[in-house]
Length: 264
Image 1 (cartoon, helix red, strand yellow):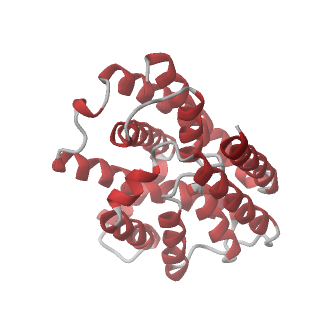
Image 2 (cartoon, rainbow, N blue to C red):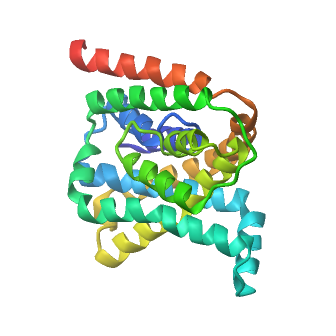
């Protein structure tokens, strides 16, 4: 992977992290199109770095919400902020368990498996289409809802399954308000990504030997800047637009990916 490839892939990650179209799936498609020959460990290294960048862009966009949550926590009361934080922690459990138990199997999936990505994009399209048919409500995410949404997030660790698409769709199908579902979806991934980075740093998995430093730096900043714009834009778009638009996009890209893989 060269610096130009890293720039393009970073922008792809930054833009698609907040679209319900699978950023990891698009990264794998982008790597295949650009002819990336990285081994799975190097490919995963780049993926983790750009995901970290978009996590930071999420923190920046939701900085007021995050400050309010911390203020509520510091009051040491069972208030709305404390409950929200507890729901976030609860939603992390399925992904943490899956990540710890099946880490090697998940890493193997990030090696340009275009057929898998295409199939999972179609699954994402179905989820978005079903969510689009659900009625909008004013319901908040409950504790049982948070755990079920967490299971959806764990499933979305497979490239091609959109994390935001899976979590927002699951939340909406459970009867939650779309804007609240989007906010919960964007915030719930922050501690998960930061925890993954911390684990890999402590374990020595993320080193400069896992990839070219300039490639990682360029990819990081490209994803961060693109993420700032995309996050702000997509919050409004998810609230006001139909998820079926993204369902059609995922279906088309998924079919193309499968077609290219089987007949290309």
